Length: 364
Image 1 (cartoon, rainbow, N blue to C red):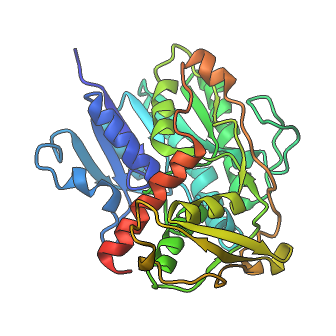
Image 2: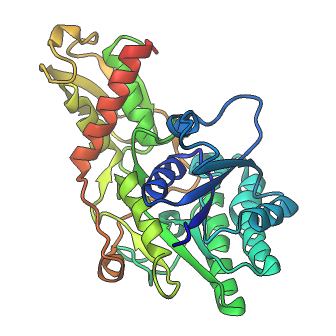
């Protein structure tokens, strides 16, 4: 039986690295597109990249960019993939307000370039588009599913909504196997450090070890549906194994505030917080210190009871906020057999354990 070939954009990101592991485990030949950089940016896949039994035997990396049409055409013709996973994006919502044109160039037009390259080359392949819960933005109903109207609240969400609809248009116009995975927030120790979950777990680790004094956050009341990234990457693969292309929401069906995530992160390291003030004047103070398995003796904790360790910085608020996201993935459960396994508290524990040990080992 011929080995399946997959082409992944965004292979060096959180999702790209987990998806690569999943596909290699299923005996795929995996090709990844990486952008040329003056510094190494393969950290999340170094364990694969540095394995001589994998690199250039099962895993192949190619320089490229979704802003370069001719490059995409050449790579598709060269690799002849059975499956394409378009995970490349400018995916930071707050940053998209600062660089809206670049965000649209990559997230919207980049998707069009890929689809048109598939059409022009005539290759028979299956295409997965990484869509997002940010499409729902100012939510029109709770929870959100595949039929919920969109109302994006950022240049990122607006760019992704173009990507969503151009996938459907090319699917219907040219009979392409192309589908959207509308994935709600999914996190892991490989999440970028500027995303709020990693920002929290890394900062809390540094605070306990005396490397920084406070964690500064934006909207503490923002509610998100947070799941575990590897499980969501398995869902991506399942979408391309179906007979017909369809769009699917992947989510946990639970929502938690940024404040809850912060509370639980501190708690996992033996710190109980007390919150004082309201809105942009709110602060988190240490109320109680206990011993915990991760830190060990509570004497190893640097901050003291009464110390202010969390403050709100209005600079982290978005110009237009998304207050609540919570997904309904009943369709994915029914048609893909997919559902989440890792609970919210387990996710937080996985992430804080990883970051605490990294900061302890590296010293920063």
